[in-house]
Image: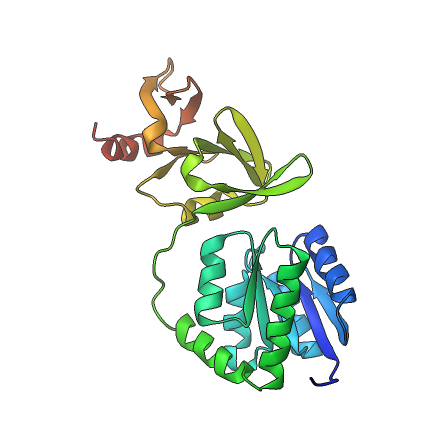
Length: 255
């Protein structure tokens, strides 16, 4: 095993997520933190400036996501990369074609250590170039639709993973969103637009800028006084329906 000190960059838009990775790196042998970043633009500058050996790169970040960072830098110029994500389809994409490894939030200490060992081996065997070439080839291929199957949510100070198939509807909550499941509400650090793009459109429909609904949960469409519209779900919940989206919703429901 080489005595080379690994210079590692940590890139994640969530301060607690960055701190957790830094803490775990502190317990690893022969590691030096080259810097941290909280968005795609900072990430590019950090990687170009510090030229780290290894990067922990969050997939979902404001303005520019992790894959776009790789495209901008160029796969040939990227250091060894461990993608970090709360969404399993991104993890699979990263693992299958691109990264040294991936970490699916929430991950435990042992899984982190496994990813680090895999990264050390790839770097020592000089396999990073081969992996990044595969990544470059993948990024040049047409994107294939992949939809969310699980989402990491915050609940009572803990993070848990919930299946998308049990979500009834989603509403906006400031810059982020809330998932509504069987009368319970869970916060998720994701924008409505990003969620809409990652959900299967044959199952979910955005009825309003502030609401996404599972189609099979809709009971009736309501025509309110004044020309406004709404939907009533099977559990009795009523949500505003945008006039601009009403006709498309009716088509989706076969009305």
